[in-house]
Length: 404
Length: 116
Image: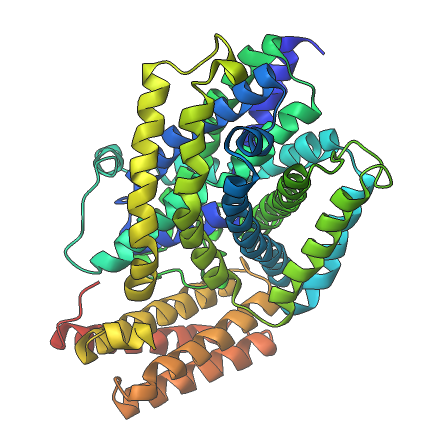
């Protein structure tokens, strides 16, 4: 495969795979409640995630270590156990929320209550992981995810006022409902700067056998793919702000969000929303489930790899098998998918510091990244993100209580 | 419990009114889109039922005066019946009633100093 094709595919799949249940829920809630005022949170989160994803890929390409492997080796198992436990707990909740997103999409289209879909959806996820390859999951589902570009098309159709959009780039705190505003800002950042993304991306780079010649691909995929991908998230926020906010609809249920695209595309807008939600969440559910198996197997030194036959990586396959059905139970018992999403995004913000701090050490250690160590800009972004992560971790739960 | 403790009674009333307004707007937008053939029956019915339930749930503390609350419930019941019987023409009058009730609630919110 030529490098150019690899870059193009990487960028397209990053755009298609960018949205997940957290991005859709937080952007829809932000736009419907506060208009364009929270655009800055998506932009800020995107800048942080672009740098961190690029570093995860660079670490994997140069050192041939996944992020989890490198943390365990460099800091010891006793340290790694902390981010491992935190990651597994958050992955469990996020996976439940992603399965919930798929179930809601099916409920929207069929009218059959979402609880009934939880186990069939979990089975479909498991089957694809059991039978599929990493390439199929990475490229196939993400390509389908391009359907989410419908939000970008709707944004252009709705013609938002550019000065108002530009105003949204500057953080401002509203006079009313401040706690709720800050809670959504934290949730947006939690949804975008997802630790699972870094572990998954570096594991994928090792699965794809990246080496130093792939650093250009890595830079392009992280920068352009994630950058353009965030435009889809912005699209969700802008459409919600243009369509739902003026009507006085504040999204606290996916049924309300489903009305977003009907103004622009009529009946097909409704179908497009359901398809976007379903495909985006299904793709993300595969990634989160796989991520849990990756971090667990890498922690204990088990055989791992989506490209291996399940027999060759039995414990790795067992982890994602058990995990997906347990997470599906959250939906079977009737947990509200949107509330679970917002809670898990806030919890993601809480665990951010222990995931991001190791980047600062690993990306400056010549034993891992050789001459491809961080420059002052990358280090500056990591330090800023660590500071931001600490603030988010401290305020996330109080804001969940007051403004969630 | 923590959420309940962190809010003053006035905040709680304001939240209840805002959430009710949001669900009325949802029911109205859903009804209008259904009338124009932009939404499937099953989704419309489920969303109207959910709007009804949410409004009842928000009004447990009797924030909205009883006559208005009863009118709202009746209008939503009528809209649900229209959807169940595929009466796209007759839902227009229910939508008009809902719009009036929405204005009444807006006035109530203004009087109580609730801002959105």
